[in-house]
Image (tube, rainbow, N blue to C red; front, side, top):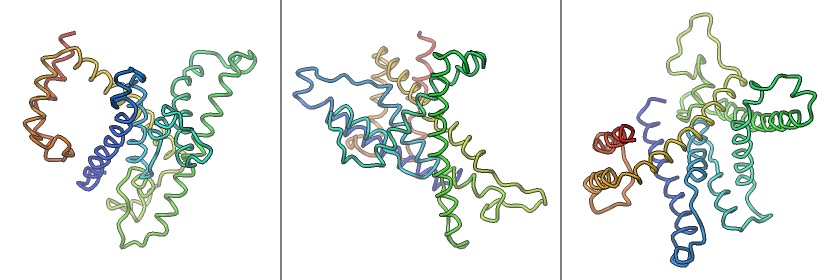
Length: 266
């Protein structure tokens, strides 16, 4: 996970998925006719949630998710019976995870008596449990496919650098850091599934909220915005479409410092 190759993959997928996000925004919000008539309003938190969901699922599992494309199709009013199954499954998984993370508190707040015997609370609890069962089925299928891929890969060939693969091969002969201790135990599917779900929820909604707050605060501080744009212009110069690379990490010092400065001003 800490290898340079994984870091490069993270940056490459960040660039690729953000280009995809921009293409959807251009088609939905930035066409001249749409701007003049003010037809559509951009919901940052929803778009960033789908963007980060596609990103974190790719980095965790190595498999591509299409929730962002599904959301675009919904807003574009072009839902079709011929829509790709993978897009439908991605949208359904996104909605299930969203419903679960927004409602699971009911199991901590309301006693079991209410959840089992009062129809209103019982229906909510049953719906959440059904969503969780669906999520578990999808994650179990992903884990099963990856285990099979690992078994079919010769020992002399490299494995993917995603986190799912790292968890599956941990404390096995495929683990590059494997040390025989006599008490080695590899992770079970249920343990891997819990870690994946925790990573997806944290990597989707927390990150999306953070990005939305950053944009909100920058928009309310014109001087901060100006300084950030000046630094970005100096680094990327003429080619503003140039993808972010690892060598840019240490150069955006001002951007990081300005984001830290935003909080005290409020």
